[in-house]
Length: 104
Image (cartoon, rainbow, N blue to C red; front, side):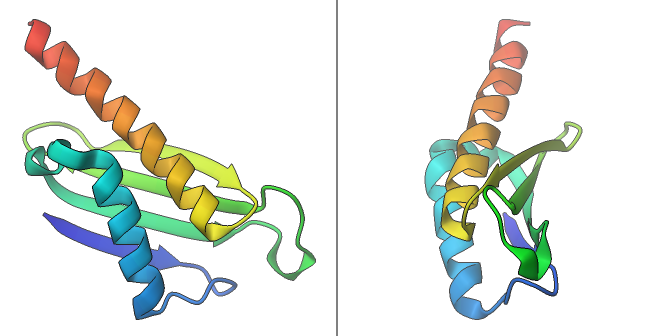
């Protein structure tokens, strides 16, 4: 499985952030990662330098093998919280999608 982190100009996308993001998302997905070919995480500071509550947007796109890409978005106050929230949402979405396949 490939992992890719993308950030905007207001969030410094260094190696440490990439590692934190990958660990956060992969640990939240657990055993589901075996069924994925790629995960892309996009972090954006919506308000830029202005700041504000819930101004970090985390968009996660997971590409399950043989299925259409699945995407979620979560806004929160800081990068770590946005990653955790996005990871929980993508886990729930993928659990539902894989569950539907299992019932067919």
